[in-house]
Image 1 (cartoon, rainbow, N blue to C red):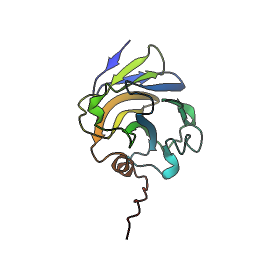
Image 2: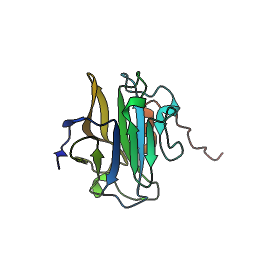
Image 3: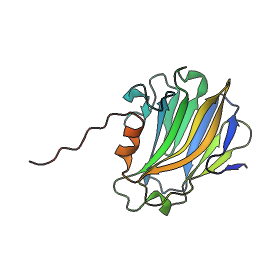
Length: 169
């Protein structure tokens, strides 16, 4: 089984991609995906797939509980040039993502591809990988980049509006 390191990529040859997060205890990390344009931002908050919004508007990206995603590449809108797959520690979990052997298994044609998060330490949220358009096809690339500020910082980076928590007066 091929294992990709940070920055490496591989072709995706199947129409449907199944992805599973591995290495974290169930419920420890929240899985999410962003459908982003060439500018690296979602078109609207509807392009953010997570536990409260388990599918993209056209159904191309869907969470598959307990820890997976299914992506139907033919349904991805033409203006979306990549799907960014990320995780964030649940607020109840102490520590950083570097404390777990986090990774993903990608099934998208041929042999399963193993992706390992590398170089993470105290970050609370991270992009594990991305599926991106390349000429007439799709590829998977290992990103393994984290945000110490956690979930809110990660989603803002991708153009999602985040409500600030109310403070007591």
